[in-house]
Image 1 (cartoon, rainbow, N blue to C red):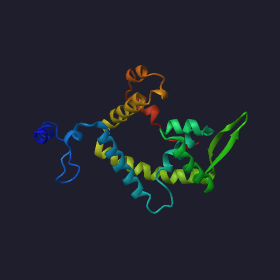
Image 2: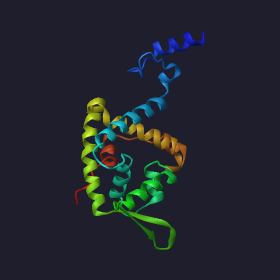
Image 3: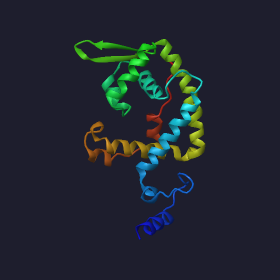
Length: 194
């Protein structure tokens, strides 16, 4: 009986594409988190394939991009902006510093905080990674549709904001948050060439 109920749910709410041949999704067919994770995993794997010839980790891209856009950012602020736990971020920063892509300097007056900056080598690496990221972005735009990109980004930001209320203040602020195409242009602005 339960199995027939799951099949009925899948028929009434089919996914756009199957996960794998002969695999029924059941309740997962309508679970947003499941599809977000699959999309993120597929996107990450595609980006990793683009970087296969480089001796870098795909997880470095967002870290380098955020530091490049925010010179002097603290590790705590970087952790929040990247939605990555500080314990997961520290090994990445250790490796980036070891390979002379990033510098960490203690902040005067706060012995526990560090200021993060890109080195010239880090800027060059980021520029190379940006080319691959732009190529992947063009591919994603073809999949999503250019006209739907801003709405998708807005929805994803709304989810992140609503589920991580400490970044906004209170859940009520997150639920009332709205964005438009104009907001996206501000949020997703290209890295300045200066």
